[in-house]
Amino acid sequence: MKALVTGGTSGIGLDIARELDKRGYDLILVSEKSTVDKDSFKNDVEVVNMDLSKEENCYKLHDKYKDIDVFINNAGFGTFGPFYETDMDKEIKMIDVNVKAMHILTKLYLKDMKEKNSGYILNTASAAAYAYGPLMATYYASKSYVYKLTTAIYEELRRENSNVVISCLTPGPVYTKFQEKANVTFTVSTLESSYVGKYAVDNLFKKKLLIVPGFMVKISRIFIKFLPVKTALKICYGFQKRKDK
Image 1 (tube, rainbow, N blue to C red):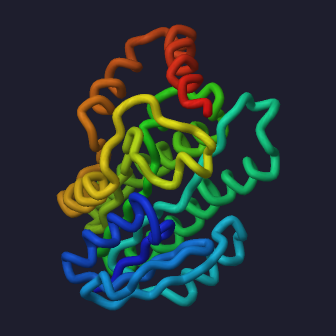
Image 2: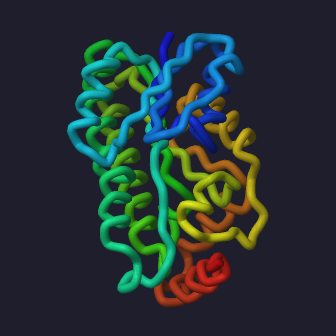
């Protein structure tokens, strides 16, 4: 059995990889630059350093690693600040990684799995997918795309009685390197990445559509649906502003 994890050498991606390793999967871990201690895994691990913001690299990755049983679409990053001030180049790269690469790789591996009528896909979104994102507008929009795309594919597969499983992971604050890259600090309690990794894998194999670790995220997801948009925007802005370093 083989699993491929993008963003798999740190944070949630690495902890998902460790959980899959415990379940007997050989691993391909994709990262732009970093690597991992392969000796800490019991199964075979290959690290692929590749910039997924480049479209051609997505196709190269799929061409090289086709026989995949579990595909974890976890690569992504964020940025913070008023939309008119944030760096355009960084935001375009974010869209290329969070949206474009996720879209391409999901489609390519879904086609493979459809032919076999088996396989698991997990797309990592965020609790941001349920909320509004002033001061992190592009990041929130990108994660909403992941959520909407994944849930739509789920229904298509369900109506075909397909054995292919697709799930969407939507964690709230988790302490990882994400904060450093986005230049934010969380002011609410965070979940442990190891907990989120185990929770994600457990529920993926239970064929859950939405995987929502953390009680507060479950509550806030329901609560925000009942608020007028302008009220929700004010509340979300207040939470976002507190992240500013």
